[in-house]
Structures are given as C-alpha cells and as structure tokens.
Image (cartoon, rainbow, N blue to C red):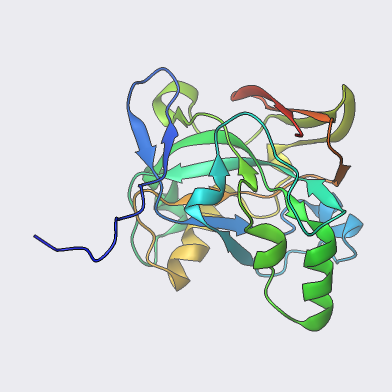
Length: 228
C-alpha cells in the first residue's frame, strides 16, 4: 500500500441522470472554434482546418448550479457546450469506432475570462489563466447513451435573463464527436473518465453579477445558472 505524504485530493465525480452512481473524471479536453459562425465572430476563417484543443482541470467542472463571478477580470463570457463523457479509450481510435467509447452526454458551459485570454493570445502564451479557473465549467448530469442515444443534431440555446444570446444546432459542428475522439487519440492516450467539451455556437458575450443564464441542449434538458 502506497504511503502518502499528504492527504490525497478527492476524485472529481459527476452525477449520472436517473442513477445513484457517479462518473469519475480523469481529464477535460475542450475544442476551440468548432462552429463556423463562432469562428467568424472570433475573427477566424471557419474553413475546416485541423482542430485544436486546450484543457480545463477536472475540478473546474462544477455541479452546484450557480456561477461565482471570478477575480482579476471585468469581462467574463458564457459559451454553451455539449460535454462528451468517455467510458473507454486508447490510442489511434478509428472514427468508425469512436462512438463505442462514449458513456454519455451532458449540458456544460465553458466560462472564459475573455480579457485575460485576449492578453495571452496577444503574447502568444497559453490560455489557462482565461479558461481553467475555479468553477469555470458549470455542468449538468450525464445522460447515458442507453437513455438518449448519440446526439449529432438538436437545438443548442443559451439565454441571459430570458433573452436568447446563443442558438445553433449540434449538426453545425465542424468536427463531429467521433472525429474529435479520433483526433485526440492520435496525440493522447484517451481513457475512461475523459470529458470533451465540444465547442460553442456564435453569440458569446459577457455576463455580470445578478444575471441568470438558462442553457439547454435538445435531448439533455436545461439548467438555470445564476451569476453570484
């Protein structure tokens, strides 16, 4: 038995819809600019270039149902996303086999300190200070493939104070879920517990304390998330 010098950090887990079991999280991958309209609004060509990914930390995933406005920023943006949770993994996964590794799907948000991210972009530095801060990824329960199937189409919507800010469809993804899994597996060993945030439609923008975000993905229900 390994003797630890300090207390081990807790395993990050996510609830599973209609189950008492929990899903343990290993890694969190996020794809950038995966909807053409969002790529355009961020000033980039939406043509199908190779995808790129950044990471959040497992404990950035937050299931409390509220979003605390983070420090050291005055420009925090919402980005609604569908999360993909894996039950198995490996290297060099074929696109045709990729969906066999999916455990389920969840509603999620990639909250971003946009001002800090912009500073890092200009300096050619990594984005973690803008993306991987505490509680930066509100997430709902995972819906298993057995209960919802594989989601490759369906309305995606985010409202702020009942006003629609983001809307799109999962079928507008440039890189589809099987392609994301396959591409990542060429560079990383994917494994059970990995979570992939699959990109956001256009319409990203700022929130302030007191706002209420309402997010939904067809097939995954909805969440109400106040900014506190």
